[in-house]
Image 1 (cartoon, rainbow, N blue to C red):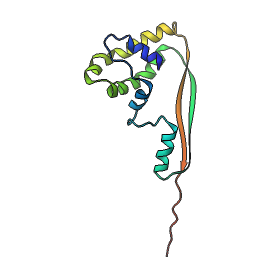
Image 2 (tube, helix red, strand yellow):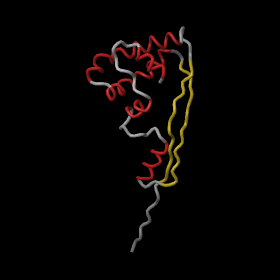
Image 3 (cartoon, rainbow, N blue to C red):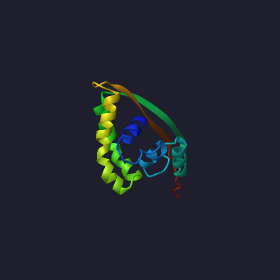
Length: 135
């Protein structure tokens, strides 16, 4: 996300890219689903047992800057609508993708590939059986 922050900072007048926690909250309902303990607690609150929630990082190769920009551009509309004013979204939102492309192309020239690590929380749980008593 540091590359995205730096790219957005090149857009003159645009608000800053949100900090990591604000960005993560903007991608859902504002709750901390990015914390394994929160996921465990929500499953427990809904009656699940044998709960496991683990952080699962995954690294993969991004072929070039354009591939990264396409990957991120799907998320950018979500975060700006949650973190920026309507005026800022209208004024600066269209500049994010070109700024990110320019920044990433400069950092990874000539179609250079690079590693990207993303993190997921993988959870499993079991709903207990309710026994019925038939008379």
